[in-house]
Image (cartoon, rainbow, N blue to C red; front, side, top):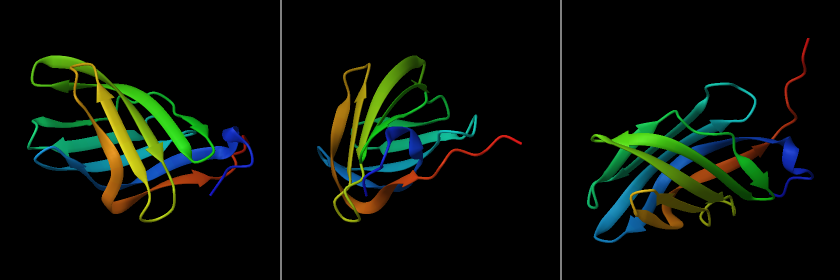
Length: 126
């Protein structure tokens, strides 16, 4: 699914898992470009002690099937920033990558689940 123009994509949603050293990480993401406050990322890698849920996500950048967004979260007493890259390659082929300011990084093809980039026109103002 390729967007005819980058500014027509307005939502990413889905969940799944990726393989990480020693186990797996669970992902839930909801990014709605035109709805203020509708940004959520939950990430759970129990094995490597990287677990957080945040609504402090910046607007996403979308080019074709590739979405990127940044944000901040708190783990314990540490305030951290992160960058997420998502590739919507169709069910069974999606990819998720995360890099955090504490040096943590993980990513690859989803081992289960689906992440979708939706291409809808922005809402009209009335």
